[in-house]
Length: 440
Image 1 (cartoon, rainbow, N blue to C red):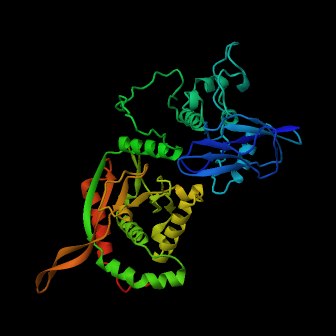
Image 2: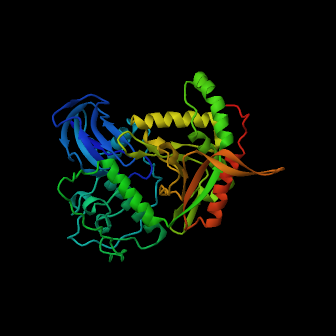
């Protein structure tokens, strides 16, 4: 008999851990290949981990509610055949079983490490003799990169209870290759910013106290993090969208009959935002320390409200390469599947810019929070009829027009008021210059 390791797979870029929400199988259960074993959740998407092999579930290592790093072994399945020590193989097979999950990068062979100082007899000689727990993935990387047990023991862990994660060991290896002094567990901690303590909240008779669900907790943490990371500035501009309103009213019924889908304003705004990003690529960027990353692709996320009151941001990839019809199809498809919790991890990752539509709830405007690690987010307000002064060859006149307010929140570290103002003005020009004879 052999034991097969079930590991926490990688569920998309930037995701380093997931929460076990429900075990679908218990110890002693027999498993067929592809049987769902456990339900897991991240701040981006919920998913299931299927069994890559047929066998018996003999050991569950984590409880429901536990947060587990990517690459960590979560269970053992007993199978027929020879025992294998290849944790990489089990991880890759687990990843391949879940659609949309990224593969772990194959590491190129490296030159042997320089000779290390002689070890004392008291030092552990194998990874199994180490004083701390290390996942099979971390051990595998350490072995491949010739990281000694003593070195591994000295690495400062950022995982739960100080565990060394995949990111920690890779950062140590990179530092070692570059000649920089790696951070170790014995290094004096750097001074951190003063911790902000929220005020005490008293309850009164009749108050109802309800704990946030998992997704709301993650949203709350993400919003606070974004405000702490980016100095937010918001610019506003009003837009006359009368031409767009008239064009949509003229085409929506025929479009519904032909395509079986609604023609809403959201795809039009996303289409215009992408066009403006082509002219102002500095807004389609991210910040990494003192480095600015200008994104090649224009991937726009659209904030979507869920029936339970939470929020998710599906991403339309390469918007600038799509026709308006293509954007409409993508928006409708992603929005519908977001509300039924059927998005894949790839469909909610990789965004370079975000748009949120306050007008859906009849709000005039708002000051959105940047979706990190992006540097800007566009807010679209409600469309209302207003009296407006128009300039004509015969003089100024007052007319009834459809007006909305755009708001652009941007990261003042790299987007100044001039750039933010020019970008949002470009979006205004695109929308106000809409061709009422445009075909879709």
